Image (cartoon, rainbow, N blue to C red; front, top):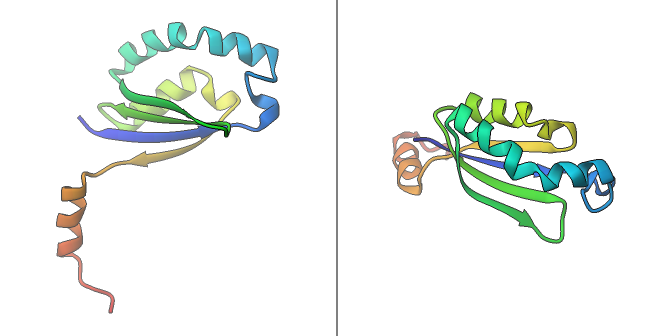
Length: 105
């Protein structure tokens, strides 16, 4: 199954440490996330807070990029986070691709 990496971030005033509504949401995040993970067939392999910043690193196995996107939308995460979204390739895979490309110099 393909792997996708998402880095989410928010400004300090949208942090659950500063915003009461977002604090309530974050308390229930796992509970609300579980049904969405099942619905979109997405498996989180890593979710880490990047200290001391206002960032999360999410690594997902999912059937498609759209499944991850839709999970993030339906979970309402885009209401208080910006996202960097990446498809991934193994190191071995990318080296194989690089070898097929003509050099630029």
